[in-house]
Structures are given as structure tokens and as C-alpha cells.
Image 1 (cartoon, one colour):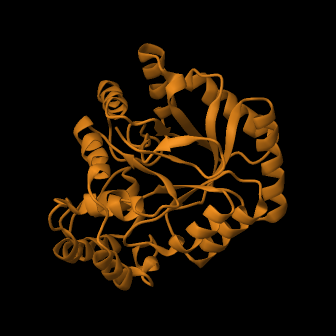
Image 2 (tube, one colour):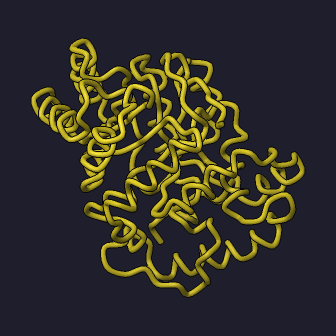
Image 3 (spheres, one colour):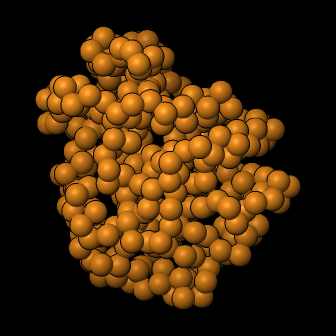
Length: 317
């Protein structure tokens, strides 16, 4: 069984590996089609292997409906922590989004509701918090979160995280944290001290750090990785080849395992959210939790290599 960890002072314990349900839902930008039977098989595998934390969003295509249908058929909704997200900022829009999520998820409450692209403006931030707190008082949501926005990580992202932590009004932050983009690591201790839970996302860098794409690979169509220019993709995948030579050695068999452990080894991280398009991918992701922590020597080497390079792996050239 997976180990559970507390999400700050939110009063919720989640398994250290969470199931990211973007890939099974499609949406505006995605990872390619997944049949509903396979999507249900992914969820079933995740739960059978001991997972209890499922992350979705209104923007993730049919993801919420798939999850709702699954639990309507399989039961045990009360045994899992379900998170969803909304881009709505004002109370009327937020209420409509929450009600739609509840309908699709076939549930009376959402455990964690994240602001999806939380606002920068302090006045708007506080109005949005007011709206979320109203939904919390009504029992529609249990915990308030902020998924700190966008595919890129910059100095502004760090400051936005700090603004939300110091507001005293957020329970959980979802942040990008990976070997190649470790910049937000500097806010993890501050979040822990403030009692704010941390969920790490993009740990595998949208699959780049899985190590399966050769340099020169092209993403096409609605694949969300087309947000990176081909030149940037080539540079990232070349870097991955070098990283594999340095980091992959027994007991780690893949770069993906190393990347997952890199995030899991931070004690401030409550859960690492990982997607999967097949049950085999889900199982492989979860197996990384049983591996030992990275050595201090390897963590130090990775830190030396990447601590100042985060922006090289963002979407902009």
C-alpha cells in the first residue's frame, strides 16, 4: 500500500502518488484519445494499488464525467479524495462551475477545489477567495486550493506562490516541481511552515522525463506539447539523453522513476500527481514510490546541474 501524507493543516491525508485525470479526459489540449473502458481501467488499477487521490478539472474534457460514472458503478467515493479546478473568479460563475462539477462527478462535495490559473491582482484574489469560502461554508467544497498557473515557471511564479501562502486563505498549492525545473523548490519550506499543503505536478515534464522520446520527436495536432517550439523540444530531449546517462542506475531502471523520486523525496510534498493513459503506465508510476530515496550525492549533482536553468525548459524561446 502507498504511504499517505497530510496536506498541510487541511485535515486531509492523501497517498503520495495521486492520479492525474487530464490524460483520460482529453479537452482543448491533451495527450491523445483514451477510450472510456481504458480510462476506467486506469482508475481501477490506481485504486487497487492503494491510491486515494484523484485530480481533475473542468477544463479536462470529459474527465469529470468519466470519474463520476466510474464511482457510480464501482462505489467507494467516500474512500477517495477528489480534487477539481475552475477558472471562474466571481461567485456566480464559480457557483455554476462547482454545480456542474458536482453533477458530473455524481457527488455532494469536492474535497479540494483549486483555482485554475489563480489571479495575480490582490483585489481580485481576495474576491475569489471570498467566493471560494462561500462555497466552502455551503459544504460544496471542503478545502481551498490554488494551482499556480501556466506551463512556465519564472521568478513571478515564485512570488505568486508566496503571495498565496502569505494570504493565510489557501489550504493547498499545486505547483510545477521537477528535476529540470526545480525553481519552486524554494517556496516548499515556507508553505510547510505556514501549514499549506503542496501537491507537485509536471514531475515528468509532460512525459519528456519519461525518457521514451528520442531527440527530433515531433508532437502534432492537439497534443498540448505543441506549446513548446520544435527547437525547444529538441533541446529538452537532448538534455534528457544526457540526464539518463547520469541518473539512471540500479535500483532505478528508468529516468521516470528518478524524476518521481526527486519530487517524492521532498518532505514538504504531500502528493505527486501523475497521469496515465493505460493501466501499465499507472502501475509503473506507482511502483516508483516503493523505490529508495535518491542518494544525497545524486540529488546534489542534479541540483548543481539544474538549480539556475528552470527557464530553459519553459515553453518560450
